[in-house]
Amino acid sequence: MRAELATTMDVPSWSEIVREVEPLFGSMPDFEAMLIRKIDQGAALCIRSHSEGDAACVLGGLLLGGSPPQGWIRWLAVRSRARGTGIGQCLVEAAIERLNGFDRISVDTFRAENIGGRAARRLYERVGFVAGPLVEVGGVPRQRYVLTLV
Ligand SMILES: CC(C)(COP(=O)(O)OP(=O)(O)OC[C@H]1O[C@@H](n2cnc3c(N)ncnc32)[C@H](O)[C@@H]1OP(=O)(O)O)[C@@H](O)C(=O)NCCC(=O)NCCS
Image (tube, rainbow, N blue to C red):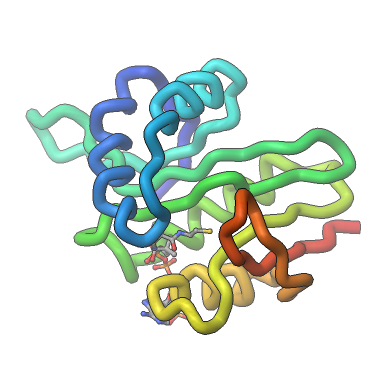
């Protein structure tokens, strides 16, 4: 499996994942505009399935942000039927590789009490992120995780 830069061809399939995670993330009315912006910047990574004869299906996506020395993972989700097969980890490792040269990468994710966010916390911890401060992002309680690269 390989993470690749997303193109505008991936937007409809990626949007299906957005609809799947809306109950967990909350409504994301401006997501498509953000995704297209990130695609233009080369900051949208995805893993596709390529079943023969079918259009490529996005199985998971990740949006990068920030500028040196501080990188960010702005968004991450895997299609529910494809979870638990390493796609999330592959995307996060690809993000770390692309942000090579940055001092650190942060992500604001779910707090421990949010059961729906446990897989994400476990994933970030497994690749070396450390739980940081409790923060509020747009009034939503989150926990910052930080991976120090230098
Ligand atoms: C977090 C997410 C991206 C992980 O994707 P994935 O492809 O399933 O990830 P991986 O297969 O690489 O690893 C999943 C890890 O989470 C664990 N996991 C899965 N469901 C879990 C749960 N309910 N509670 C705790 N751990 C869980 C798996 O066991 C695995 O860890 P392990 O290998 O150490 O056992 C995916 O679950 C998802 O899209 N969740 C909803 C959106 C989300 O939370 N996004 C992050 C926002 S910051």
